[in-house]
Image (cartoon, rainbow, N blue to C red; front, side, top):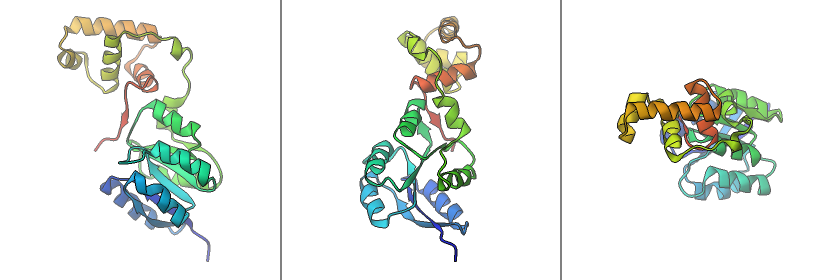
Length: 213
């Protein structure tokens, strides 16, 4: 009988963890050892169960996913870590990669992508989903960009998908002022579209990639 890959899910949202447990349980290649819903319990349970792969949410009560990841890469180097997050900035995702995550996926992406990630890291490969990659690839001269506090506010709201009129109401300023701030920040960032500007917002830590519910 072929050996299965043993998985442990560290996720505090019951709907997500139940869905993952069911989906992965249907695949004969994997054995789900259980679900941990609190960051403070994660390290002791991982040490006890010794899984091959940990599917780790970044935002947890107690210890954060990033602190758990850092500890695991020091104490349990054999265990591979798949970071899964519904709300994280590009800087958070980059930090996870820098700490040695074996795979990084956003919850904004199709759930089936997790199988591609598991296959990759089981083979010893690094897996970074396209949605995450778009926000962690370095942008030239980003550190040289100097935005005013109001421009940063406008940029963050643009990244959240708000229109000029919605930003006007949110900030309590005139729409022509919003348009001017938008023109200025896009000129400084050297971008020509809201999509490109949003990518900058993620890398500057002004916005998060949020899973739609």
